[in-house]
Image (cartoon, rainbow, N blue to C red; front, side):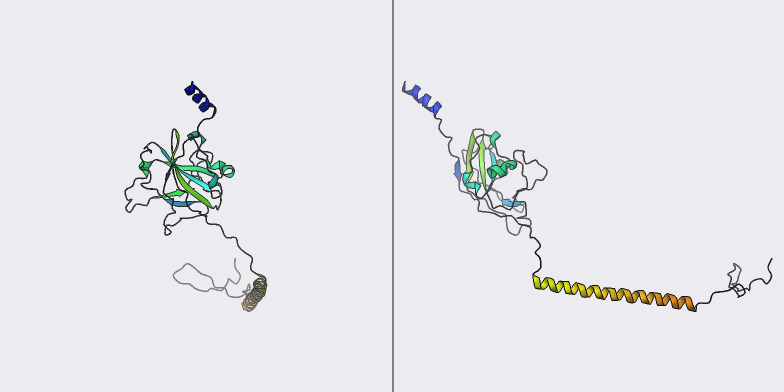
Length: 246
């Protein structure tokens, strides 16, 4: 009878799901020497290599990257089902979403050697932000905080610590030149305009004078004056025009 009552109580007041195991790893930005480490819509993280070798994590469990606004990270609730995974399109409402799904086989503990091992967050401009796992460009400058979440078919299994706050680069707006410099710029532009007008006037005057001088001093052959005609003979000769002509 007592066991039956316990079953009834559990059905009326179900126990909350167990909390995921905490992994003492803090996601880190990639090396400062890496080009494109931070842009206006992307950031680059180091891969969490060798951080998911716990016994309760299997090779089939999904490892998600949680991207959250710094303020919303305190209210983050891990989804209990894969179907409830928040997508980038819900970021404006929830303040977080899951992306870059992987498994621990992609994050082995061996050293990568010379091969670069990073995660470029927000690097996919082709996927729809309503698609689960889409690595859509980050929607604003932030600040953002990230952590890794391991999920199985039964729900959350383990999670890392939150990263520190990260702000993206921002485009610098062109600022107007202060008053005194602006007035000086106007004066310089006015002087250059006057000099340009004077130069154009001088060039036009020189062109007119040259044309007039050339046309006024060049003789124009009349009907009775000798004309130099080129013949296609063995020699070029100048012959006077025919006197009567027929």
